[in-house]
Length: 238
Image (cartoon, rainbow, N blue to C red; front, top):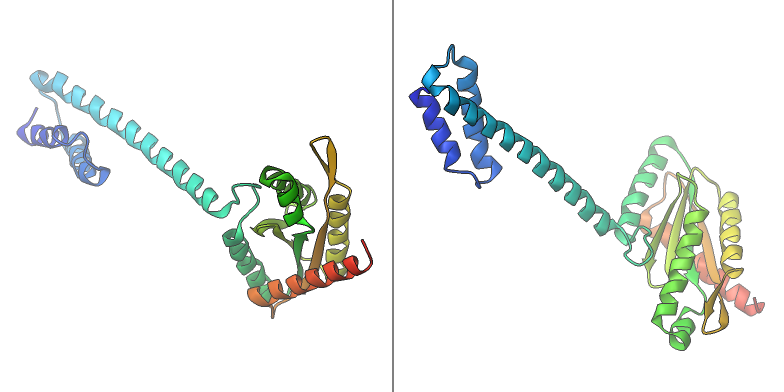
């Protein structure tokens, strides 16, 4: 093998565990030398092909390493935008989603709906039956939201017993109908605990957005509508 090719091989061999940024120059130099060699001396043949085998093995290993890194990055991104308990999107993901849909509403003059969902008597469930039961109640509400969302819809757990869902390209009446369906489903759902059936209920407020809406204002409107719904139903004893 020629001295320059041996030098490249020596450099490569001395850095088997070095970062890719340090090894890649050796590989690139070696590849250039391989491409420009007009012949291989018989005495160098075995060493030459052993080196080629090592290069190919490293390339395969590097490719796997990159794939694993990309998979890990995706996993971490999912963790950073997912509520661990319910599997819904979290507050961070909700904000990012609202930024996108409001930007789309501005560009295309679209309308949509944001709904604020708050469980009724959640503190009492926790106090009387424990936090494990409270967690089950939250998971149940999250499941109901998922089951009633279209592919273009979005649901998130904001914090505690507060949830938000977003309906794109919808008007306020469609939003109210969806909210009533979800509230009715929640209210018809019970949890079996210690031989008892715990009834669930929730209050929901709906607000529409358009090209002029902002994130904080639309969430504030939906939150206010939710409290009005809660107060009205409690006044009526429902």
